[in-house]
Structure formats: structure tokens, C-alpha cells
Length: 421
Picture (cartoon, rainbow, N blue to C red):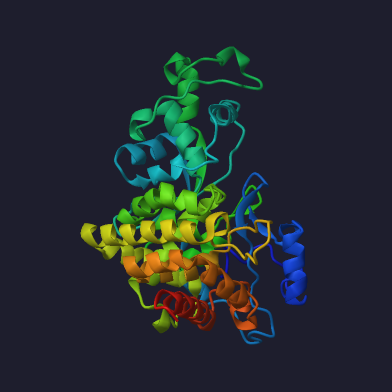
């Protein structure tokens, strides 16, 4: 998949033995406990692994003519405004800035000390980074980049606007005399300084095609860390899908099936839930959309368009699939496991193939799979040795043909065992 999964993987780099070594050597490495040393994983803001395997982009052998989705440069409409803290807070109070509140629940939110030091920078008149917003038809703004900064400012100056507890300053480097102070404790001069602080806001305007918006925002760097596609989707696509994905990413069935190893840093967990939903809402065998990122954008809209009863059905299917995967594979669920002791990272494409197909079975079929787990394991190990399947879960996984390959082959495996074949 472009963007989230492809970032950081170099063209032509060996995938640690998986692509080029004989399969018995792969199994030997894994049984020795060394296999996961050769499996690259995604990295979060803090430089720590997210627990999810990094997938390779397509190389020239896969598609020599592949290019990014093109668009006309003149379709980019971005306006840069100089505004003040006071005006941004006014927009927040009037509900004209969408901070996506549940975004703040994930790990990585700034601590009180980090937020306090941002306020200290404003008091010291040190410029802070610009904000990036997406405008809708009513001139409301969705914050795509700058949520943490704006939240810190609002918590200190207008906590009622974001429904959060007020920020009390702590851990300051220079203005230590204000340690323990709330906004009301500052002098009138300092409060005015904060309200009149100039900020730069880049607004991608309403009418800009959605594909262009996502392309533009995917190029934004925050502290040298590119925004991830699911972060952009979450910021720009309002509606019940946001909370729906967040709740299922925190559901004990998902957390247990993934061994608590999928970090919520950069919303990797929510993207995995979305990928499941995407292929439960449409038939994977009919998937032909070339741009996988746009497919997931469209899928979030589809989830938004469902009614509560339909989302409840999907949620129940998701939980059943997670529990069955745990019963079938234990701690190796959704991982490239050949029967050895080592535990590889979660593979998102394999997660799709396993979870979506388990959800498509009835309760009796899932019970038969669990009762025949040894047979499932034997066929699963053989499937991982299949070149086409291996490529379909490892390289350019958003390619429609590879989507159909991995979901089709895994479906045949499960149905065969469940039906006694």
C-alpha cells in the first residue's frame, strides 16, 4: 500500500530472506528465534516499532509503468492566513474547528510538561510551527496538522472550548516563576500577549478534489515525521466511522488477537480495523480499485453511510473473527508463522486475509476450524511457502490482483477445512 506501509522501504532492498532464500531456510531461521530480526517493522513518532510489519512497494518487476495517482497542479487551492490565537479560539468556541476529540485518546498525546513548554514558547514570543487545515463548504476547518499544539493552547486558555481539564503550567525551562499557574493567574499583559500571538494557518480550500487534499497533506512533515494516511483520513472524514474504528481498535477481542502488539501510535490499529471493514462492505473478489489509499478513504465514507444496526452487525462479525483467530493461531495470529518459536510482527495484509475470511464463515464452520486446527496449521504453513501468496502479503499489497489473490487463497483454505475437505 502506498503511503502508510510503503514509507521508509527502499526499492531493491531484500526483505531479510523472505523473498530470496529457500523456504526451509526461512523456517530454520524462525525456529531458531532469529527470524523476526530480519523482518522490518513500521516505526512510530518516538522511534519505537509499532508491532506491524513494513510492506514493500511495487518494484519495476511488478509494474514498470506504475505511477502515483496524477492530478492537475492547478487543482491545488491552498490559502495561507496570518491569524491570532484569539481568533482560533473563537472558531473553536463556535464549533468551526474540528479537533477530532477522540484523536486525543491515543498514545503519544503531549504530556502536561510538553504542553506547558509550548505555552512558554508563546509567552517568550518564540514562533511555533504553522497549522494545516481542510475547509468544508461552510468554512469549518478540520485540523490535519497541529492538533496537539492547538489542544495545548485551548487547554490553557479556553478549556471549555475542548471539554478538557484546564492546563496548569509545569516543567518550564525559563519562566519558572509561573510554575503552577493557570491562565487566570497570569497578568493582564501576559494574557493579552497570548491572545494576540500571530499564527500561520495553511487552509486547503473547499472545492479542492478529495484525492488532491490527501496527496497534499501526505506531503506534510511534522518534526520530520510524515503524516500517515489513517491520521489524514481521521482528521478529514467526519462522521461515526471515527468512533466506530476507535472503539473496535480498543476492543479486548482485537487487542487479545494481536497480542497487544499493535501500537495505537500513528493509528496503525485503526487502519487495520478499517481494512477489515473495507472488505466486509464490498466483495473482495470484485475489488479492482488501483489506488488503495483512495479505496480506504471511500471505505470510511461507506462505513459512515451505514446505519447503526449495520455497523453493529459488522462489529459482531469483527469480534467473532478476532476470537476465532486467537483460538486457531494463538499468539501467532496474523503473523508469518511456520511453526517455530519466534513471533514475527503483525502483517496487515495477512490480517485482512485471515480476519475477513473468518468473518464470512458461520459459527459452525468456525467451530470446525478450531476443532481441526492442526490441519489448518499444516495448510497455512504450505500457503506461506506459495510464491504468489507470499508476494500478495509482502509487496505492493494494495494491488487489486494481490488483494484478490490473498483473500481468495485464504478463503479456500478455511472453507476446505471447515467443510471437511
